[in-house]
Length: 414
Image (cartoon, rainbow, N blue to C red; front, side, top):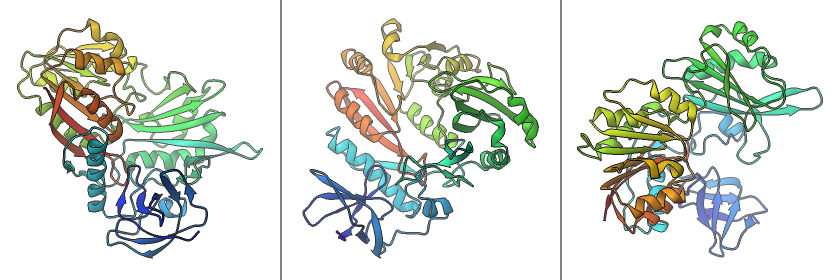
């Protein structure tokens, strides 16, 4: 099959979407709206859709550009999905992805939401996770990222152009010293913290990281590097360079801290006057939202399952006391004081069903839902719609060059 397909839009996940001759939607990576493309032989047909591979761009679209990152084209890097289209087209695609999910899944009569563009389109990530693949019997390792069309493979990373320069400087220093990492390395994560310190998190099987100090001594700025060892499926711990109670480098935090702060600020503003009001901060992580709410005079109860994140949050300065609780939201809700408002920022899987039941069974005046997955956001909004109405939605581009998007939905008790 060598179908020529007209690409009309960008779907969730970043693939271009068109129609086959039989009417089925076909999804094709690295294509752009407004262009005609030829597909490779072997289109994978499913009952109601298909997936094809790009063979040739017959007629480029007006929004197509040359991706600046060599890994994007040469290695088919799967870390980004949209470098081949203009930034304006990326924003339009993300607005449409969110709007489509809200109309199709949440059943809302709503237009595509406004989107706040990124402060920086490049070099914004404060964290990067690298895959590791052993090569042959020699024990040599390839450390890098996965190609989007060969997810079991790993190509060696030279430079990630959406990662902070300081992280890539650390990576350049680490690359010739991989032998100083644990021998059975499975994943390597590099992260910047709030004070600019650099963290190396080595996830491995077998024995712990025996001599992390050797790596710190070999790095040009090793005194500013904190080493963590994390057993696969286990908890990470500091093994060199910092106190065990330092910044929790494995805790959730937006990889784009500047845009995360903008989104959080807008979300908190939508609550209005919360002076002396009890506000729940669910899935609160390291306490950014809790501190922002306390600054507005709220009595804040913040809940997160990550004990390290909560422990660090408890030591943060806040204008008034915040009650931080380490535990799963669905488990601790019955013990919390009755709130006037709730801010929820769950993981991509969305709200636990028991949290949804509590929020619908005892509605609060105002509920703010922050999400990085439009589909699970829409699912949860639909579940909450019996007792709430959506009053505002705004998207934020925390992840330029990728298909990911942050969305904040504001709800009021119906």
